Length: 276
Image (cartoon, rainbow, N blue to C red; front, side):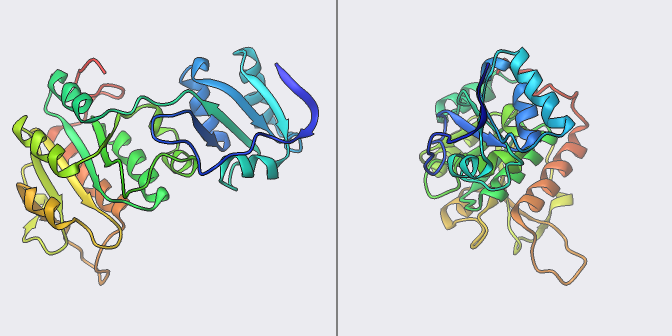
């Protein structure tokens, strides 16, 4: 159904949804991806009536056919509600993604029929970087992304947009104690490898074919000391130019796709054959 023919005010929003709560996404691609994942996940859609192009009309018609409530409100109101100005005049509210805790992560790993491939982010603060990492991990077929629950970027509309729909498909674990989680992964037979510029082992000389958690550090300081100590090995990405380091999302992509190369490509849509 559609509420109102003209532009109105949308409910005020705060800093975005908490991890695991109801989620808000903005932008045509993100909303299209959410609708493609099943209309039951999308229960409200906000649209700026000033945007009347064909892609928007098709998107709104798809939402209406699915029985999703469509509300008309101006772009400024969507910005206030979403907390992101780059929404292209469209935003949606979704049922919250089920965020795994440590126990859920370990349960998922134990259910896999092939060696797990995990991306662990040690204190990534920038939401655009987190979103890019999620997008890259999903594209590489990673089985989950692990993030700290505190002192790190959380799932906000900005992250959702940067992830370009990846959060609909890749499991995310938010853990309270990253060091403890790494130790429990090791106890489960997972090899923990950290990416560090000062490491002496090249990424391309490391064995990444077995059960693996790739750990990338935050933007400012890289891996924290305790995280570094817990890693079974540290690897560096050889750089041919004068640039001293890579953005964390780029580094994560290089590492993940080297692991994918060593393992052989996975069938799209299949993550290790588990039940999750």
